[in-house]
Image (cartoon, rainbow, N blue to C red):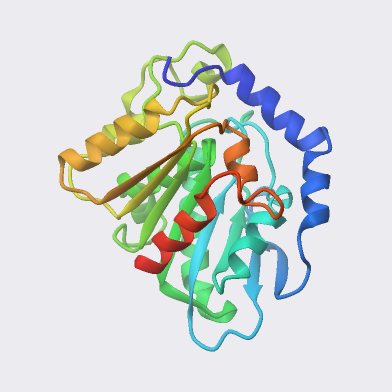
Length: 281
């Protein structure tokens, strides 16, 4: 299976959330050098909120990173991601971390529609936070990577939110599922409206050049197999679209994300790879 074990994904994220890992990492995150604006509404729904990490002392409009959390489209929360917010705000990048509607009750494509609304809000308000509305990068981990890349390859979602689909400057997918049919997990079959629906797959919409992409994956990921990034990259390359792929040895589904946090950044080069990608574009 392209997605190894969705039950494992749920277990990993519950461990991350409830097992003390978040608290441990959060304790290591510096509180200086940036300001956080919490629970900014980008829509009327309870989960349509985001946090924005704004670097101190910005002197010019900064690039913006809009991040979507993982959690098998069923759980997760922006409040887990101070480490990510600090990581990029400390480098002069305005960083927004968004919540989105979860299953149940909201299945595909509601979470992608929410993400498009979040992009529209961030673009319209980027200037108020010192961000450059023409340099917004979409990013996500796991299910969030699926959401971010779907916005990048299927322009219908951004158009429906009143946004030009060519506006994202780049897409960064971390341990993402892009090509994972057929589904076997009964929860995901219900969530996606069937076991073999091509319209749920980002790879299905790659039929021409798209925004530049960075796809990152741990070679030891048994939850979302690295073949997802390999196949997505091959499809993008086949249509002449710019893509960089990074694989990290000895790293699994959660370890790749933790490698963005203080105290863990020597585990992979993901942090440096993301900064280089944003700087280049």
